[in-house]
Amino acid sequence: MTVTVDVPPRYLRRAREMGTDRNKSFEEREGYDNHQNTGGENPENRHQVGMIGEIAFAIYADLQVNSELVEWSDGGVDFKASIDGVEQTIDVKTRQTKPYVFSVKEESVNADLFILGHLEGDTSVKFLGMATKEMVLNGNRKWSTSIEKYNYQVSLSSLKPIPDSESIESLS
Image (tube, rainbow, N blue to C red):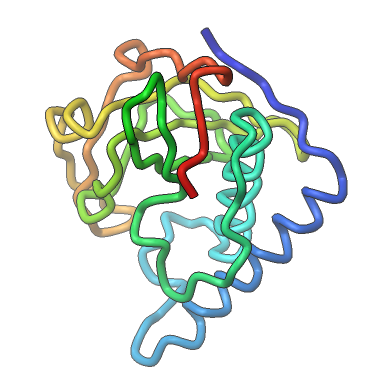
């Protein structure tokens, strides 16, 4: 089951602002080339798309987005929630191009659950499914020449449906 969330204009503006600010923290990191290993994507746009996905999931699950500037990285955890009474950390991965596989960078496997979103147009995020940490770590470990890193890949057909919004409660 997929779920599509329309993001209102004011939240889109905020997502783009937050994505731009997050990207600046990468740009300002000494010795880091923000344009290296991007897979041909514009780094600022990538961060904006990621924030749109996080906000869309927050809307869906009635969660709060951490609006503080997270310099460098959020540690691979976007939300802490209880799902059906079980505490879980959640990392939302949003792609602008339609994914053919769910890829998670090897060094980014820090959450309990990984949610895959696809930005459709400029305002809607379609959540295609989720993978547990175990599913990701058991996925196909593959070298990506475009970003020069290892990714774990999970087939889209293996993804589980995202949790029902009524089963999710914020822990932060």
